[in-house]
Image (cartoon, rainbow, N blue to C red; front, side):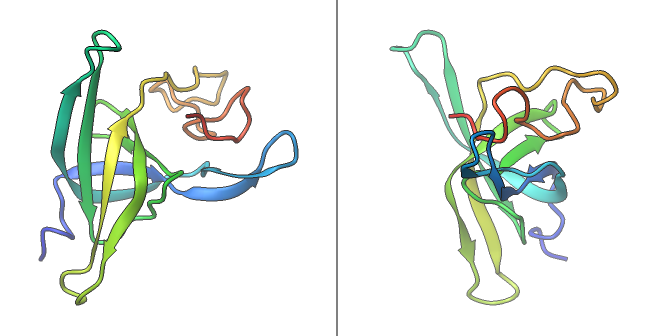
Length: 143
């Protein structure tokens, strides 16, 4: 069995879907239902931004055999205290041969908090079952 098929990390990916916002515009946003995959995650950088204050921007690389990743997808890293991550850019897909085919994406941790739990609609971890970025803002993806 390949390391691409049996990674040590467990993530929930909310794939990007085309939806309509509250103004009737078609926008890309994370889906409501996650896809759970096993993958490998490796640190890439950890930069302190002195101009902004005490802020830490950490970037990780997610490597998996297959994953429904895209620029508007949202990732919840289950093994890392259920932290939320954004995909940076378009994931790279390698397909030279079936044995080495995989997806490689860069992830950056989200700084804004997720939706507060609502009555009967929370998964117990403070995250709404409706998805990672739903609420008063509608289905539009935040910055």
